[in-house]
Amino acid sequence: MKDSNQLPRLLKRHREAAGLSQRSLARKLGVEASHVAFIEAGRRRPSLKLVRRLADTLGFDRQDLFILAHPEAKALIVEAKLEKAPKRWPSWQRFIKNQKLLAKYNVTNRELRTLEHLSSLGTMVSVKEFLTILTLIRDIPASP
Image 1 (cartoon, rainbow, N blue to C red):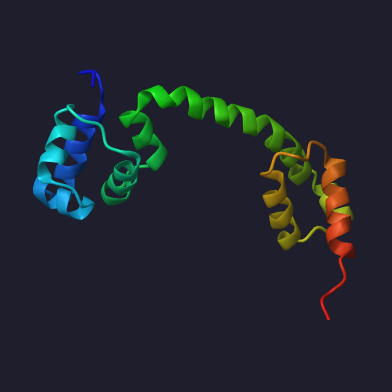
Image 2 (cartoon, rainbow, N blue to C red):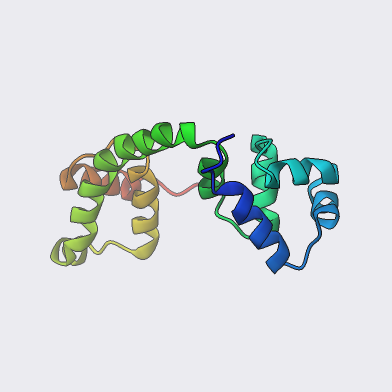
């Protein structure tokens, strides 16, 4: 691991701020104290499972900690975010900002939450598609 890596210093600082020794942190994580020492020395990287447990124990964002532990993965994560966002958010943002349209069709908060979940799939690209889905949802007969 490179000396320029921020992970070892950051983990040590957060561990100490939490009032934990390497041994007590290791116990919470279910690993040997020497493993924590190696990570803080920059001689080892935490596994994916350990990244999750470290993040939860020391109050880190899981994704940020993962990128610090495995910087080579950053490009993959950034690319994935860029691929998803343009498909989903522009049409959703246009839809929810159009207050006249929402009022005209009496869109409820429950319907908005449902449509938002559907928008996260990235398949709807226009306001018209949201209205079509809304109409279909409203036309579903109630269960007997």
